[in-house]
Length: 446
Figure 1: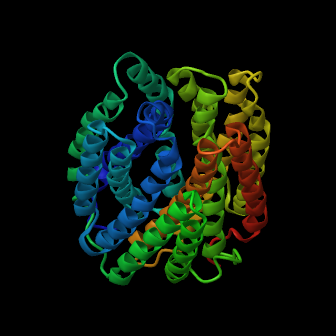
Figure 2 (figure 1 turned 180 degrees about the vertical axis):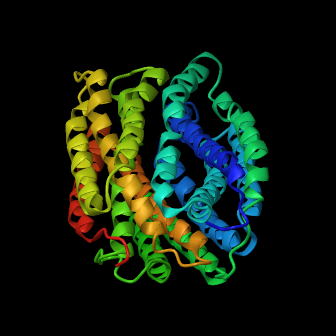
Figure 3 (figure 1 turned 120 degrees about the vertical axis):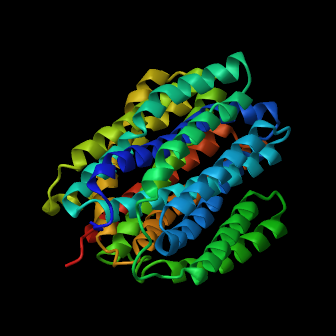
């Protein structure tokens, strides 16, 4: 632990980091509840998946920029910039009169939220000894509990009783309160002694986000030549950029950090590729209210926090088995949730089946976070933190793009929405099974 950080500020730091996570959790959970209504009111089903994917594409750029700033300037400046960008995005979305403007607001929100994540990882790594970090990561995961309980119901009520615009407006005071509490404490964390300038990584992040964006636009295009051209151009731009940013061996899930990051991408893609579309199924297949749509996914978020709390007590020798167990639970949860695509299936049952997948995410979240940060050399906390969150963002962004493409095809053709969502669920199962294979390499440094 850095000697310049006084122990008396640890509580303030912990509160600030948990509040920052809760802020993003409130926004994410509330948006998933309100988005089906927003999309229907603004006639924007064709941009449903793009709205999800654009958030994570901007998240990629934000987290890489923040990771570089953390190592050069300390965490306070990137935190302030991230909060300001996030609040601006909330304002843009609240004033939107079309789905395109909603998408723009989500881009700004994603850039701001992306900057907050590596700040938490690097600050925990610098301010707490290794023996206490698992507990801190469990707290970060537990920061989703209150938003998961309150945000869906509140967002559903606001959407039904007043307007979905208040879903965005209502988060602004929370963002400002978070800044008020966290900024002074973060000011006590100095820059790293040895700095990775990160300039090339920012350029690579822009190329990666641009490539994934082109890929997303391509697979959702209704014009074959445009689809082929954009998809090919996106892959040509994104794959080399990602190879330069990720550790060698990422595609083979080589033992150590490459396997850890591969597992995070696969887990996030599998989980959020279903979690993002369960509310849509509740809306379009079951004709449920916005409140019920949010309720269906609450259990998974709570189970995620429970799994993280339990995993924080696991010993080192359980690291690989924790990741393997996590993927197994995710796969079981997805398969058990597939019947939500039937209008006769009770949504209350889906609440419990999807909770199994949430427990799986929590089971692997803490061990992989701690293990990944153990590879951070002095002056590179921000970079490793951004790599972890890049893995998460890519998983969600790519599945958001693919899942959104199936929904878009369904919207403009005779392909039933149920079949489109079923395709998404099948892909998610396959990704979870790949994660089982990749989890064999989840290890700490020798």
